[in-house]
Length: 555
Image 1 (cartoon, rainbow, N blue to C red):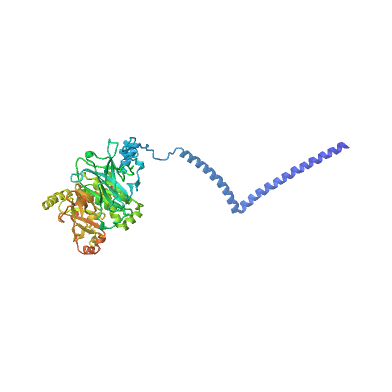
Image 2 (image 1 turned 90 degrees about the vertical axis):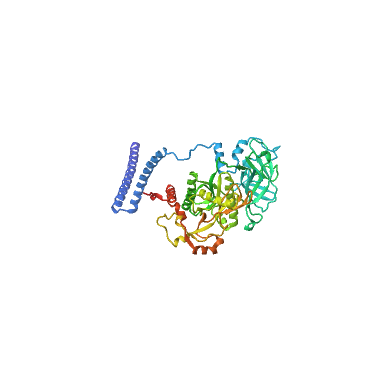
């Protein structure tokens, strides 16, 4: 009886287990049937959403696979790449010193570098110690500063003057700007000589004003151009100072120290041309500049000295080209003190503040004179729209060979300058007559051969060949101060030479007269005697510099 009950219980459990397994199998079969039925139903009715999801899933997997392959391939390629960086060897200190000397000619860095470990002072370290270049006070890159008890000095350059006609004997001339008129503060020059550990002191002899007060801006507080003179003491007449500092008291440790410039070649060259600070940030005058430089070179200019404020990139390219050829020298320039040096803003300042502009121009003009005191027979200050044109001769040297006897016949002395009268070649005079077909239109001066019949008045708006043996300070149009017997100037006759001035309009002060110039014009083709060679030179330079683009070849 008990055995039968146990057997029945076991059978019941087995049946239950089988039922459970059967139920699971039925559910599984039903689910599979439902799944495949859904797929079939989906394929039958082409559901866009489900298909899109399916393809998107498949696409993602494919993209991942492709990206992996692509990334792996890219990484393998990157492993073999090397970035292009400047691997130029690090410059040595002597090389850096040489570069700085070129960039900042007024800094006595070479002299300082060779004496920096020496004890150089007067009696003790607290008196007139030789200043480190790292303790000088610079202003707007190129200027060095003295703050005195009565005015601020911004100093630009120092020059060795041993000209025979100078009555004060060997001296150092220092060019700079002082925010005082008729400065009264007493200052001293500290001279530093090679192989001397102590400085030599001398009282400042003169503040020579490079301006006329009647021209305006004659106010305290405005920086004015000056040429400061310090005589070299007799025991040192045969020695040239390596550098000079201007101080208020002899024992002051200077905040300025200028290298003394003395350029004297074995033989003088003929002609140098000096150009004030170029202010052409947005004006691309590059093609006209090429024509001008080439013409000056033909006439006999050995070198053109430019000063650069702000210029168009194409002008920069042109100047770099001629610098490499040795025909041009470019000196960067800033305005001292609180005057603006931001490009654009500086241009507006110089446009609106005309007297400030004129006073600032006197620094590059006189720096150019003193750098070349012993290098050239004549120095001309020209703008890039002006040319001193010989009427009978081809070259400046032949012109002066004819002029000098005429000047000596009037007065037997060497003049400080030889001035040439101004005549306008206005732009719109050409348009009344049209272009000349045998001359490229980009040759501005060759195309513009109609000028005003009348010249500007004698001694007005003239330009000169200056004699550097006689000139003490220069203005744009004539010398302001001279050595020996004063600023004598010979007026070159218009039959011998004329200043050809290429402008869109006359200067502001000649507005009324300008209408007369326009209505009374004549043709003047004097410049055409250089036509063939000038066209060839200018065109070749334009082609070399890429101004004609890819279609610039001429067969």
